[in-house]
Image (cartoon, rainbow, N blue to C red; front, side):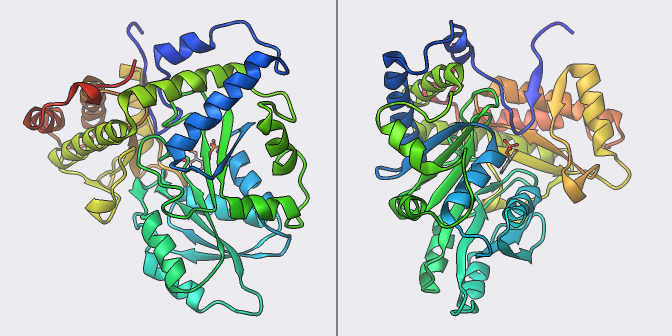
Length: 399
Ligand code: PLP
């Protein structure tokens, strides 16, 4: 198919040309001085994106699952109790990772489409067993399967209100660098991310940020077996700009470029752009006569929209139609949402015209698969939103 492919899944996202060019170079000596300067630059840039002065950033060749494991094995001991919530595929997955690693997980079922209610966190912590308290609360900032963003600041306040000192471990895989993340202000203990979403890189890097309290626990060692993910050699070598293993050197060059692009646009403008593009997608969904899965409009995600399909319309058929007819990749329904929804990703390097094209292809595919919509309705709704508030130059997508 001629023209560019449209990768509008909620990650991996499109990699800007500048980032591709930055990675298109000979592989360097990972023990040489060039690498040390590069490491320092990317760690400093990531601290900005996490919103931290004191947090320690850790980078591994890996993915979000690796970052989950790294967070858990450095802060917990086998058998430790952990509080987790199931309101989507990734919150359930984070809990399962903890279970697989030998922690005692209490998993609270919630509705898929619900945010994580802070009052639920507070109630569970108040009712905790003081003889054997929870050591960590697992939170997903942006649930990529349902398109719902939880309020991490309010969750931290709920933990404070309960007077509980469990660690706050937050998955920011599909929010970091797209939706504001305030590591220090929310007193997050460990944040978890990956390269292939808001950071505009290919898959391949697990990214974490650990607060001093979590680093201190990691230093003592919680008691879990660990090798590759052990923070101690990592932080020691990082201080000199190196790693205790062979790092993904070319991805680090790409990361430095991506961080430069985020800084040039300005993080507030990056977040405003995501909010604007997301609002346009939601306007289109409404104009198609469909609804989003997120129950409360104010918690709707600015990186992914999960669209509920009418009875009898198969989400996977819509995806297949979009892919085969338009080279447009949309996100499938995960877990129990399989076939019932389609997910439109709108994060990373993305601008208004790309969103309009995505909506145009999506509405054609929906119509072809039996959704009774008026062609152009969704695109027009998004155009009206864009026209009503002309974008600032800084809101155009990075290139
Ligand atoms: N957490 C969230 C919120 C995600 O969206 C994903 C993947 O999409 C993951 C964790 C798992 O990350 P990975 O697939 O990079 O291991």
